[in-house]
Length: 203
Image (cartoon, rainbow, N blue to C red):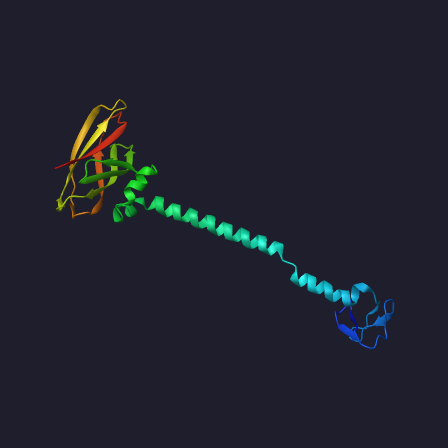
Protein backbone atom coordinates (compact mmCIF):
# COMPACT_ATOMS: atom_id res chain seq x y z
CA UNK A 1 0.00 0.00 0.00
CA UNK A 2 1.45 3.33 -1.08
CA UNK A 3 0.56 6.29 1.05
CA UNK A 4 1.02 9.75 -0.40
CA UNK A 5 0.34 13.30 0.79
CA UNK A 6 -0.48 16.36 -1.30
CA UNK A 7 2.38 18.87 -0.81
CA UNK A 8 -0.11 21.75 -1.18
CA UNK A 9 -3.07 20.99 1.08
CA UNK A 10 -1.64 17.98 2.99
CA UNK A 11 -4.54 15.71 1.96
CA UNK A 12 -3.53 12.07 2.45
CA UNK A 13 -4.22 9.29 -0.06
CA UNK A 14 -3.81 5.50 0.00
CA UNK A 15 -3.32 3.48 -3.21
CA UNK A 16 -4.15 -0.10 -2.26
CA UNK A 17 -4.24 -1.30 -5.89
CA UNK A 18 -0.73 0.03 -6.70
CA UNK A 19 -2.05 1.86 -9.75
CA UNK A 20 0.49 4.62 -9.24
CA UNK A 21 4.22 4.38 -8.64
CA UNK A 22 7.22 6.54 -7.91
CA UNK A 23 7.72 9.14 -10.66
CA UNK A 24 4.05 9.26 -11.67
CA UNK A 25 2.35 12.63 -12.03
CA UNK A 26 -0.81 12.96 -9.93
CA UNK A 27 -3.41 15.64 -9.31
CA UNK A 28 -5.00 16.38 -5.97
CA UNK A 29 -8.79 16.11 -6.12
CA UNK A 30 -9.15 18.64 -3.30
CA UNK A 31 -6.92 21.54 -4.35
CA UNK A 32 -6.15 20.43 -7.96
CA UNK A 33 -2.43 20.69 -7.32
CA UNK A 34 -0.20 18.62 -9.68
CA UNK A 35 2.98 16.94 -8.49
CA UNK A 36 5.22 13.95 -9.17
CA UNK A 37 5.25 11.09 -6.66
CA UNK A 38 8.57 10.85 -4.85
CA UNK A 39 9.86 9.26 -1.70
CA UNK A 40 9.55 12.61 0.04
CA UNK A 41 5.74 12.79 -0.29
CA UNK A 42 5.05 9.05 -0.09
CA UNK A 43 5.02 6.73 2.91
CA UNK A 44 8.30 8.23 4.15
CA UNK A 45 6.47 11.46 4.79
CA UNK A 46 4.50 9.68 7.50
CA UNK A 47 7.75 8.41 9.00
CA UNK A 48 8.97 12.01 9.12
CA UNK A 49 5.76 12.99 10.89
CA UNK A 50 6.33 10.28 13.48
CA UNK A 51 9.93 11.34 14.01
CA UNK A 52 8.92 14.99 14.35
CA UNK A 53 6.22 14.06 16.82
CA UNK A 54 8.55 12.03 19.03
CA UNK A 55 11.53 14.39 18.77
CA UNK A 56 11.96 16.24 22.06
CA UNK A 57 11.49 19.98 22.01
CA UNK A 58 14.83 21.09 23.43
CA UNK A 59 14.00 24.79 23.07
CA UNK A 60 10.86 24.39 25.15
CA UNK A 61 12.73 22.38 27.77
CA UNK A 62 15.46 25.03 27.97
CA UNK A 63 12.89 27.78 28.41
CA UNK A 64 11.15 25.76 31.14
CA UNK A 65 14.45 25.13 32.94
CA UNK A 66 15.37 28.82 32.73
CA UNK A 67 11.95 29.77 34.12
CA UNK A 68 12.38 27.35 37.03
CA UNK A 69 15.86 28.68 37.84
CA UNK A 70 14.64 32.29 37.64
CA UNK A 71 11.74 31.48 39.97
CA UNK A 72 14.08 29.83 42.49
CA UNK A 73 16.51 32.77 42.45
CA UNK A 74 13.66 35.27 42.84
CA UNK A 75 12.24 33.28 45.75
CA UNK A 76 15.61 33.17 47.54
CA UNK A 77 16.18 36.92 47.02
CA UNK A 78 12.67 37.70 48.30
CA UNK A 79 13.16 35.47 51.36
CA UNK A 80 16.49 37.12 52.30
CA UNK A 81 14.97 40.58 51.76
CA UNK A 82 12.16 39.80 54.18
CA UNK A 83 14.60 38.32 56.72
CA UNK A 84 16.80 41.43 56.59
CA UNK A 85 14.12 44.14 56.38
CA UNK A 86 11.94 42.60 59.09
CA UNK A 87 14.79 41.58 61.39
CA UNK A 88 13.52 43.64 64.35
CA UNK A 89 10.07 42.08 64.26
CA UNK A 90 11.42 38.59 63.67
CA UNK A 91 13.99 38.86 66.49
CA UNK A 92 11.32 40.19 68.85
CA UNK A 93 8.80 37.46 68.00
CA UNK A 94 11.37 34.64 67.85
CA UNK A 95 14.16 35.38 70.39
CA UNK A 96 16.11 32.32 69.21
CA UNK A 97 16.86 34.15 65.94
CA UNK A 98 18.74 36.93 67.77
CA UNK A 99 21.95 34.88 67.91
CA UNK A 100 21.58 34.03 64.21
CA UNK A 101 21.32 37.71 63.26
CA UNK A 102 24.37 38.43 65.38
CA UNK A 103 26.42 35.69 63.71
CA UNK A 104 25.41 37.05 60.28
CA UNK A 105 26.60 40.51 61.31
CA UNK A 106 23.11 42.00 60.95
CA UNK A 107 22.80 43.02 64.60
CA UNK A 108 25.07 44.42 67.26
CA UNK A 109 24.66 41.68 69.85
CA UNK A 110 25.37 42.70 73.45
CA UNK A 111 24.68 39.96 75.95
CA UNK A 112 24.92 41.46 79.42
CA UNK A 113 24.25 38.31 81.43
CA UNK A 114 22.13 35.18 81.32
CA UNK A 115 19.04 37.07 82.42
CA UNK A 116 18.81 40.16 80.20
CA UNK A 117 19.74 40.44 76.53
CA UNK A 118 20.18 43.81 74.81
CA UNK A 119 20.51 44.10 71.04
CA UNK A 120 21.29 47.35 69.23
CA UNK A 121 19.67 47.07 65.80
CA UNK A 122 20.34 50.56 64.45
CA UNK A 123 22.23 53.74 65.34
CA UNK A 124 21.37 56.90 63.41
CA UNK A 125 22.83 60.32 64.16
CA UNK A 126 20.82 63.17 62.66
CA UNK A 127 22.76 66.29 61.76
CA UNK A 128 20.52 69.32 62.16
CA UNK A 129 20.23 72.45 64.26
CA UNK A 130 19.78 70.11 67.20
CA UNK A 131 21.93 67.05 66.73
CA UNK A 132 20.38 63.86 68.02
CA UNK A 133 21.29 60.20 68.14
CA UNK A 134 18.49 57.67 67.72
CA UNK A 135 19.15 54.19 69.03
CA UNK A 136 16.83 51.30 68.22
CA UNK A 137 17.10 47.84 69.67
CA UNK A 138 15.52 44.88 71.40
CA UNK A 139 15.48 43.95 75.08
CA UNK A 140 14.74 40.36 76.07
CA UNK A 141 13.78 39.21 79.58
CA UNK A 142 15.15 35.85 80.73
CA UNK A 143 14.39 36.44 84.40
CA UNK A 144 11.93 34.34 86.39
CA UNK A 145 9.78 37.40 87.03
CA UNK A 146 8.37 40.36 85.12
CA UNK A 147 10.84 43.13 84.33
CA UNK A 148 9.11 46.42 85.19
CA UNK A 149 10.24 49.56 83.38
CA UNK A 150 13.89 48.53 83.05
CA UNK A 151 16.67 51.12 83.02
CA UNK A 152 19.33 50.99 80.32
CA UNK A 153 22.73 52.63 80.69
CA UNK A 154 23.94 54.01 77.35
CA UNK A 155 27.70 54.56 77.18
CA UNK A 156 29.29 56.56 74.37
CA UNK A 157 32.93 55.64 73.73
CA UNK A 158 35.66 57.25 71.64
CA UNK A 159 37.85 55.39 69.16
CA UNK A 160 40.19 54.34 72.01
CA UNK A 161 37.35 52.74 73.92
CA UNK A 162 37.28 55.44 76.62
CA UNK A 163 33.99 56.62 78.09
CA UNK A 164 33.08 60.15 76.98
CA UNK A 165 29.39 60.31 77.91
CA UNK A 166 26.67 58.16 79.50
CA UNK A 167 22.88 58.28 79.88
CA UNK A 168 20.46 56.43 82.15
CA UNK A 169 17.29 55.74 80.17
CA UNK A 170 14.20 54.31 81.87
CA UNK A 171 12.04 52.44 79.37
CA UNK A 172 8.29 52.87 79.59
CA UNK A 173 7.47 49.17 79.24
CA UNK A 174 7.14 45.98 81.25
CA UNK A 175 8.58 42.66 80.11
CA UNK A 176 6.98 39.36 81.03
CA UNK A 177 9.09 36.23 81.45
CA UNK A 178 10.89 35.28 78.20
CA UNK A 179 9.38 38.27 76.39
CA UNK A 180 11.08 40.69 73.99
CA UNK A 181 10.24 44.31 73.21
CA UNK A 182 11.59 46.86 70.74
CA UNK A 183 12.92 50.08 72.30
CA UNK A 184 13.84 53.50 70.91
CA UNK A 185 16.21 55.89 72.68
CA UNK A 186 16.89 59.47 71.60
CA UNK A 187 20.04 61.23 72.85
CA UNK A 188 20.14 64.95 72.21
CA UNK A 189 23.45 66.65 71.31
CA UNK A 190 25.76 63.64 71.77
CA UNK A 191 29.44 64.34 72.32
CA UNK A 192 31.45 64.61 69.13
CA UNK A 193 33.90 61.81 68.52
CA UNK A 194 31.59 58.97 69.51
CA UNK A 195 33.00 55.84 67.89
CA UNK A 196 31.02 53.08 69.60
CA UNK A 197 28.08 52.52 71.94
CA UNK A 198 27.58 50.11 74.83
CA UNK A 199 24.26 49.23 76.40
CA UNK A 200 23.94 47.96 79.98
CA UNK A 201 20.94 46.82 81.96
CA UNK A 202 20.64 48.55 85.34
CA UNK A 203 18.73 46.65 88.05
